[in-house]
Image: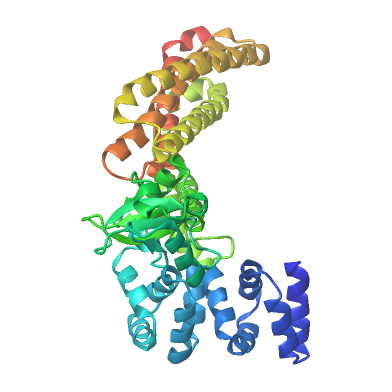
Length: 446
């Protein structure tokens, strides 16, 4: 669908049929429209953008990635940009303003007619509950009747993204409770809101990290979560679509860090120079750890010279140790991310993973020992490799468990326990263990 529309847009623009190209673009769903627009080259974007009306441009900026939205916003005149920001959801407008050069952001904010909805959001970091929330929400007074509340809703323009929940507040916006639309509709018309509201409201403080917000919303199965300040006054609400964005960002960040890509903003179409700058440092670290592992091997140079066949099995030790560590690392980092592991669980988790490593090592080590014997006819060499695998796989599960737990204790992201760090240990110790055992039993291998 998008590919066909893109082709139609490009064909229309080549023939100078701009209105036809715009019609094809605006016929798409806003999400697809943003994807199609982002795939156009700069020249085509520059032709289309000035022809879009305020609402279409606002929808476009809301659906584009933050960086792309800021690039588009910078090409607009300040008065037109202010009108567009007024048409956007406050949280989306705040995100765009936060990515603009300070002078342009200040000028656009001064031109806006509804800046009072956006300004409170600009003081919060993007990755906190305050940075995620929107100030577009509906509140009810506790003493009005359900009939009065329904009449109020009829007179209020409700957007498609209006939360299912209505929040009950006092005059100072102190959050008292929450009422679902269904509960409001089926209640006796003469009952007070205070009587039907749920006073046990799950809320987030404005400075709560977005990952913790996501955990709370998932844990309590919430479609929206109110955000309160230190005194319990309602400041905004986080909706489920914001939660999906957070989950995507956090999952990308963890996956990238496990793969030694420190910048979660990188993608397959990032500029070559940027990709090299952001990915190269970890490769240097990987090179250093690899050199250390090679140094360990060099300490057994004379041994390998005597039994050259040993070199053929070093990759087996390194590969299985690294894979075991990566398995454990992925499980532990996920458990930490979902808040499934408490500090009191650390010793039990470590013991359990060590036992898993022991049995994995016994099964894999026995299979490797039999395989080496059938291949070389040397049962001692097979035994040495099997024992080395048992030891290294126990170590791999222990290291894969300890490193992320220690990082969490230090307040760092557990995903920083990347494979380049963990496998560096398993490779070096695995080589030392295999070659050390070989040096002890060398007389039995000939």
